[in-house]
Length: 68
Image (cartoon, rainbow, N blue to C red; front, side, top):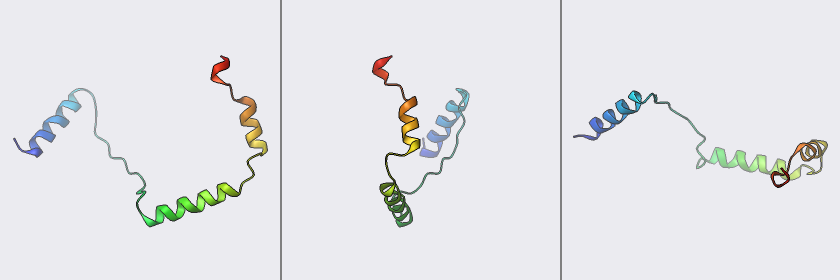
């Protein structure tokens, strides 16, 4: 049995179980464009004051799982 036939049978079994194939595109983390953008965003985050009103709000509404 060829690889194509095995893959086809596998896909058919999955369809019979109620699944459908999808294609997902994700960023290529190996590309130079991704690396540059990640570094740019990391530098921006590093410059932000960590004690902002937003962070105070998040901490105020956060529940410690150990307290429940």
